[in-house]
Image 1 (spheres, helix red, strand yellow):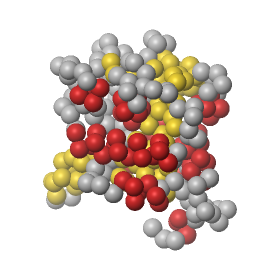
Image 2 (cartoon, rainbow, N blue to C red):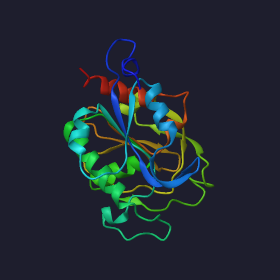
Image 3 (spheres, rainbow, N blue to C red):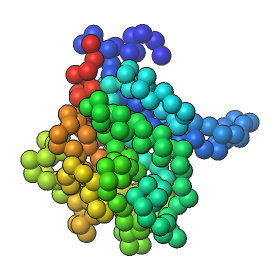
Amino acid sequence: MTGTDLTGRDGRRRPLIGITSYQDDAAWSVWHQRASLVPQTYVDAVARSGGTPVLLPPQPGGVGHLLDVLDGLVLAGGPDVDPARYAAAADPRTGPPHRPRDDWESSLLHAALARDLPLLGICRGMQLLNVELGGTLLQHLPDNSHQHVPARFVHHRVTVTDGSRLAAVLGPAADVSCYHHQAVDRLGTGLQVTARSADGTVEALELPDRRFALGVQWHPETDPDDPRLFHALITAGHRTVH
């Protein structure tokens, strides 16, 4: 990426936005090996909204140094959070734990909150935000409610709480794309529910005492025609850029 790519039209440096990512087996060209990766939709959403995306795969240490140079953080979607993190036995329908990713993202999350770094949690990212602040999860929603068939998003409408930071971004309601079989149960400390679907499922959370700390259960990165959440994150990140 060239120097001009890192500068916006106003001459300011584009905010550096970290995106948490997977470590998984992957195949490309003639290769089939372990890789650090994230769906391109996250990268495109950050770049399209005026930020410079930086991938953050699980790794040993370095959280403080990373967050010292980042201007915002996206906790991306992914596998189920280990139920042991909220002192629950695993439901048979809960996916296998990915403890290195849980540990890595937990460290990033707590360090970001301590710095008041702008934060957007997406799907798993919202659930991790709730768990790390002392909340719990429902480990399986009714079949065919928020996840029907593999790799197909479910589209529905969510109602947003009036007066919330999310309402300032999206207005009173939004049509969203989701893919999850778990959901927030007991709320973590300090969190407020700011959106629900028609069946009552928690669709968004926020920390009102932080500059920008939001979690959404849906996948805004999949809709290039509605960049409002990423624009809001980037705008908050601009305030830390010198």
